[in-house]
Image (cartoon, rainbow, N blue to C red; front, side, top):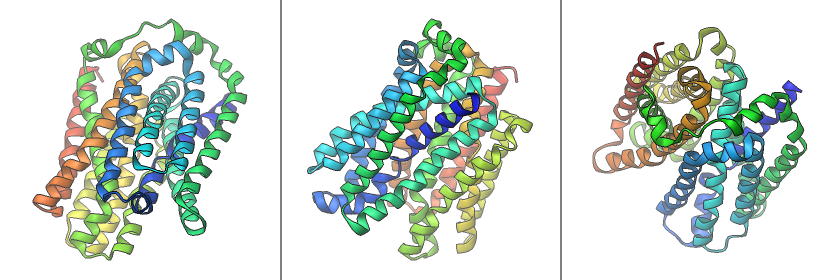
Length: 383
C-alpha cells in the first residue's frame, strides 16, 4: 500500500511535467497559425504563471478544506480540461483563456504534493519525485513533434490531454490508498491556517523565500536562454544550439535521479550547498571562450540545480514545523513562479541592450544570493 501510493504520487508528478514543455515545442507553428508575434508566447506563459501563483498562495486553505488527495485529483482534471481546450482553440485569445484553469490546477497540485511528500517520505523520494517531473517534460515534446510531423499541433495537445484524463482515472481509483496515512488526512483538516502574514512572521521564512526565488530565477534563465547563449556567443548553428540547449534538462533530470541516492546520507542542507557549488562551477565553464566548455557547462549547471529545489522543499517541515509546512510551501511555490516568470525576461532586456555574454554573471548573482539566503535560513532555524 505504502509503495503503491508512492507510485501514484510519482504518476501525478509526471502529469505536472507533461504540459510544461508543450507550448515552447509547438509555438513556432501556433504563432504562424494565429498570425501573432513571437513574443506573444510570453503572454500565455504569464497568464499560466499568474494562475499558478494565485493557487499556490491559496493552497493552504484549499488543502485544509479538501485534502491532498482531493486537490491532486481535481487539479490534474483541471489541467486535462485546459489542455483539451488548447486543442480546440482557433484564436489566440482562446489559448489565453484556457491558460487560466491550467495555471490554477498546476499551482495547487504542486504545493499539495510537495508538502505531502516532505512530511511522509524520505528526501530521496522528493528528489525522485522531481525527477519524474523531468520525465514528463521530456516526453511531451516528442508527442508534439509526432503531431507536427503527422497531423497538426492541436493533436499534440489533445494526446497529452488524453494522458492527463487517464491519470485522473488512476487517481480516482487510488483514492482509498491515501487512507494509509489516515492521521495525515485528519491533520490536514484540523490544522490552523497560517496565512501569508503568519508565515512571514516566522523567523527565517523571508530568507527562504528570497533564496527559493533566486534559485528559480537561475534555473529558468538557464533553461530558456541556453540555446540563444550558445548561438550568440559561441557561434553554434541554430539547429545544433537547440539540441545542445536541451543538455540542461538532461542534466537536471539525471541529477535528480542520482541525488536520490545521496540525499538521505548527506542531508538536505549539505545537498543544497553541494548543488549550488556544482552549478557555480558550471557557470564558470560557460564563461570560458570555448564551445565545448559551454555545452558541458550547461549539463553541469543542470546537475548542480538538480537537488536544490526538492531539498529546499523537503527541509521545510523540519525547519519550520509540520504544522506550518503547507502554508510555507504554498508561498514557496508562489515565490518560485515569480522568479521563473519575471527574471528570465529581465535577462532578455540585458541581452538586448548590453550583451548575451553577461549570462554567466547573471546566473552567478542568483546562485550566490541563493547560497547566502539559505545560509541565513539555516542560521535562523538553528541548524
